[in-house]
Length: 299
View: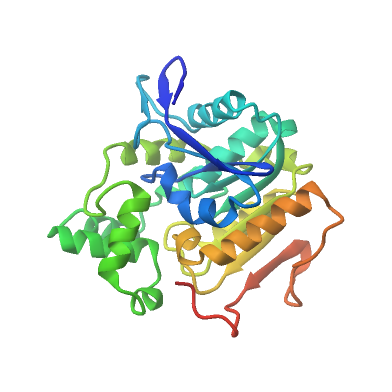
């Protein structure tokens, strides 16, 4: 537990190897990174944490900002003696990671931005479809709300091929709550995201090897947001996973882990070029990553 002037932040560290700081999104505790922690701990030392106001982390200030959450993440790195580290953020965590990298660029070995946004306001957009999906996660029976939430973060084809009840139980453990319930902090997190816009400053990240990952069926961080984000960071590499949704780090954990491991290793040693972009690579390193026919769908 880390204590700052206005917060107490719960964090965990596990694994052996180069340090990686993992930042989660809105409504999710640090345990949401469990598929990556379990898959990468044999090669990397991974630090995950509950953002202020969720899980075991608390705060006393009257408002919540992306800048404050980035300061929490940097304070954890200081407490753990991480002079330099790889940095990965998912959804809201991607905005926090952008702020941290802009604040302390010399400390970030590499940056991975997963299912996130160029501007925080994109996350708070109120289209008719998003309003309807949001209402379905809050209205009806608890079973109906759980079902609506899984559909928000996972694509329909995937949901039709898995045991929904088992998936809901697994997600509850990773999110730190029953999917039928929405923590009050989520609305504050969404407001913090809506106020954050670092788009005009992202060219300053040119010296940091950056990977941007999106999912074709992401209903929250739509692929076009990721493409614009990658275009705003000079030299960023863009990957789109075709059969995945917003919960790609869970749905396609093995693929995400492989992408992250290669990205981290290549940032540490640029001479390593294995697993580079396939023949479908486009200018500026942008390419789509379709399902591998030799592998089963992401499960």
